[in-house]
Amino acid sequence: MISRESLAGWYRNRYVWAAVILLTVSAVAVVLHRSAGVGVQPADLEGQLMARMRTTLERVDPGQHNHAGSNTQRAATAGAEKPPVICGVRVYGYEPAAAGTLADVRTVYGFHLCGVAEQKCPWDLAVKLAGPLIMDMSSDPPGIQVVEATAEVRFVDRLRQMFPPRYAEPALKEALAPQEMADLRRRYAAAAGI
Image (cartoon, rainbow, N blue to C red; front, side, top):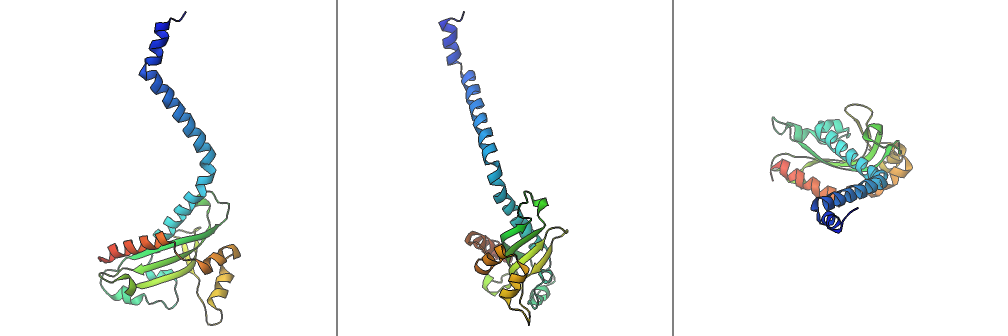
């Protein structure tokens, strides 16, 4: 039989209570993780896609951004060392839309704004590359195709030709999110030594 003294001692034992609290917290954490696991993944995937787009665009030579008639030559010949390219991006969507991981994504539809960070050159005077783009994630490095007008096709029509309708409409109205723009300006200023 259990005496009152031994029962009271059990209740006062701090190790027992620590174990009870630890088990309770662990059980709650497991339940929350399982219930929220599916909902968290798309936001994480979009963040991964943004990071991959930004890294890809910043690593390639400005001429490889495939902007017809862009004035990237000025930045390329300004000094012996090529200045860094600093980019901000926005993801409008990706295909297949049901992709659950970065490895599953084949095509990303988004927007980019990049500045060539020449030393002491302020953002307002920097060579910039901007516009909606399609990134082919099935190749390494990813392929970049920028939406641009031609002599025969207006920009809006070209965008609608290249983008699926559900991504074309946001691309006509939205560029960088305010926080992404602020981060781009901050990173540009650091790279340009301003």
